[in-house]
Length: 94
Image (cartoon, rainbow, N blue to C red; front, side):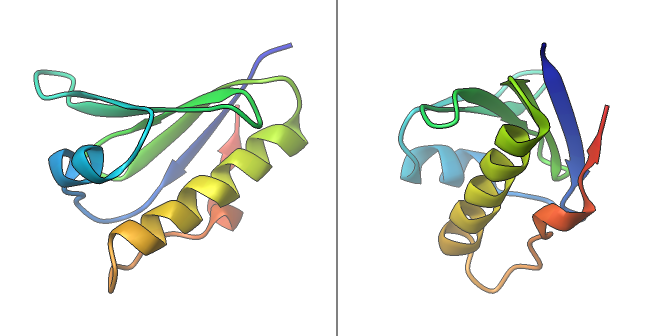
């Protein structure tokens, strides 16, 4: 079973600066511009777009996807201080 969660942060993100300050990240500066973050626990891949859209792929169940979303959103709060980072509560599962 493979789940995908979509969420929207609602603000433009400095993906290049985030990529330089985070570990286990791949940044694609060409279209589609996306920051790919791989997490070990839970084992998922997070795709973050400059518009703030967040896609979580590879979760085995809904709880793992929510846990990964919460961890990643808290990372964003630390890396982008003073931003209006979205909470993981407004993520919708597909």
